[in-house]
Every structure is written in structure tokens, then in C-alpha cells.
Length: 357
Image (tube, rainbow, N blue to C red; front, side, top):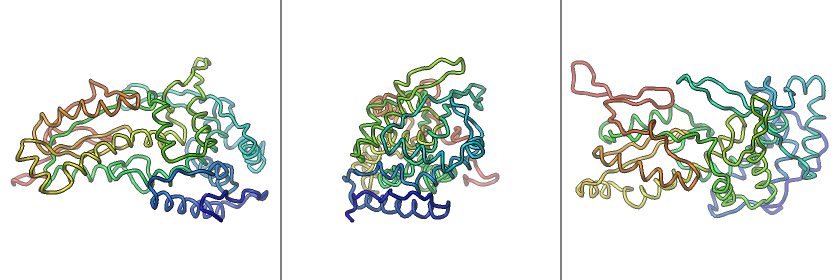
């Protein structure tokens, strides 16, 4: 069988959870390996994986075990209702048949408002259980491919990466002997609501040539929102928070920022001698650390070097339909401290010594 040949999806028996898990992992390992071996490869014949029984069973297991399993979408169906009134096999059979025939169409997400730590409200869009299962299956197919491209500076919503890894990297950069002590603390205004669909889909198509997969992603982006007042709103931009696929799509879009700073680092700051030469010329050096739509740029140099990066970041974001929040984006010294991922990060002097921690 060629590497791009479709996986056999003729099975009518649904695999058990363990068998599904291992089948999905084997396929994901292959996809990741193929993507890593050939960075210019564009993948076709992926759509059949989205409705493959193993992928759907594993997707169901993830959705059913999620804390939001009891939360219904616009159709008011919950995981428990499907289990008791419909039957999981029957439900997955309907999902699979509609995907296979091309008749599957996502419906509007149900908007809910949840309080943020700041006291403001965050908009979430809750898809139906069927849409959550399909989004999760799509994510299972797409994630291993894009993980081969994502850069180490990105920490949010990625396998085997967590908040503390990003914090540890900031600590490393701010400490001796690295001394990246000026920080551009950036905030993207309404990132998940304003990501441009066209640049996002363009970046998706750099790796995915299967038109049915791209059309399915686009259908989720365009599915609309049912407001708390019961009105339907078009989704011209954005990928609503609350769906399983949204964090991956945000990372695909925002990897443009990672790539910009990575290219710059490789070309101008990648070696110790390059960095030293820039310092002699009065230039700064910097590194990006991003967790989904939250990010900081750590700078070795002076305050004005960090300030100059504000416009550079804004220029990259505008190509994605995004903008910095002027009131929440600022330059601070590590000794002043800043808040990132729910933590306050500040360099402290160890009492009675000249050492910092």
C-alpha cells in the first residue's frame, strides 16, 4: 500500500476503546513521521480517516470523558442522553454515514458567557455532541501533521507541553548568564473571535491538499453562533473557544508569529558570535515564548529594543486579521514583574546576598 493510500474503512464492527486508541496512535505516528521526513509534503486522502471507526470511537471517548460532556449544544443533547436514549454505536453510525456521504453539516455553536479572573466575561461557543466528536476526530488526524511543523517556542494546547514548561523557559532566559531581562508582554485583542478565515485556511492548505478535509474545517469556521438571546450570528471571522478543534486552528494561524521570530533568530542571532556582534553594534537580541494567544518576547538589551518589537509583532498579526490590545500590551523589566498564564513572574534578590532567583 502506498503511503497516501486510503485506510480500509469498510469495517462495520465498532472497535473497543483500547483497540481504537492503539489504532489511532499507530496512524498518528505514521502521519507525524511522514510530515517530519518531508516538510513540503501536502497530505491527501485524509478525509476517510475522519470517519474511520477507530478514530470516531476514540473521539467519542475523549468527548464523553471531557468535563463538558454534560453541557449540551443547540440541539440540547448531552453525552448521557445519547448513551441512554440513542446508543453510542447508533449515534456514531449516523455520524459516520453522514461524513462518508458528504452530507454532514455542522450547526451553530451555543454561546455561553463565563466569568474571567478580571471580572469580565469570556465568550464560549459550545458545539453539539456530534460536532464535538467530528471536530475531535479531525483534530486527531491533523494534529500529528502540524506538530511536525510547530516550533519549540509554542507551548499552549500541544501534546506533552504545559504551562510550567513556558514559565521555566522564561526563568531560564531571564537568569544568569542569559540575561534577557526586558519583556514585551503582549495581548492579542479577541484572538479567537477575530482570526481571519482566509489566512488560517491558507496555512492549513500548506500541508493539507485533501479538499474534503479543508471544506470540513471551513464549514466549522462558518457554522455560526446561537446567541444567549436565541439569535443566529454569522461567523465571518474567528474560531469560537469551546470547540475541540479551535486551539489547534489558533496554533496553526499563530505559528506565523513563531516562524517570523524563528527565521529572524536563525538568520541574525543564531550563534553566540552573531549575538555578541549585535550587542557591540547597540542592537538587541530576543526570543518569543507563546502559549496559544498569550505570549511574551524576552529581550537582551535596552528598553527601546523591546519597545521597537511592538510594531514588528503588530505587522505579523495584521496578516492574520489580528491586532494587539494597546491597553494590555506593555514593556516591563523582569524586576518589575508581569503576569503570564495566571502567574506573576518577577526577579527577586535572595535576602542577604547579591544573588537573584
